[in-house]
Length: 112
Length: 116
Image (cartoon, rainbow over all chains, first blue to last red; front, side, top):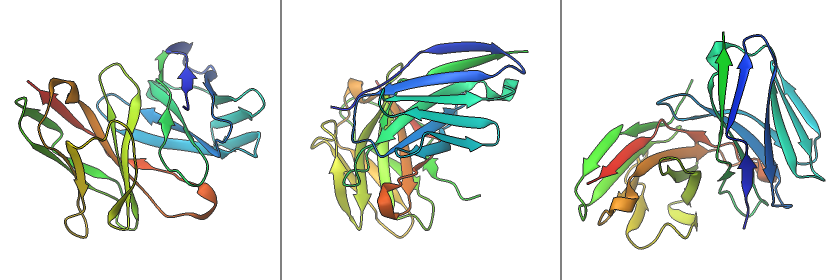
């Protein structure tokens, strides 16, 4: 079945860039998503990328997709303390199925 | 901005009891979902619902689970006879019907279910 893996923890200083990485196994993935979860809150959709794209930029967020290596990354520029949260990548397979498969989440800690 | 809401935020129940978790999806969305996250584990898909029927379900979604859209706004998850291992955070999500596979799902804040 599908599997999505992420490193568990990342610590950066305020103002630096953060890069959160994700790998997935399902070659039929059509869309890949990044979600943010703050303490006690639900999953907030940050951005997504379609599998025929290499890069997508949205303000401070840049998503890079290497489809050959099945590697996805989320770069947050000028990281702020408010960016401290757990970040989940998720993949959505072919158009016949809608279930998202999530990674285990990366806890981003931003040091002031 | 429209959002998915869930009630209650925390539910405590005794093993063997029935629980109903409630969700109000975003009003123009037509797909609805339930996911769960056991403490320390991944978010797992349970079921998706469209046009008043289940469109997809996972192995977790066995006969003790059911979903319903009792009216035009609510979407519920019922667990018939709760077990200790049902303790988890349950997330509801909804999405629009889009062409070409785009499937942006918007999540509620979750209901924490504790089974004693």
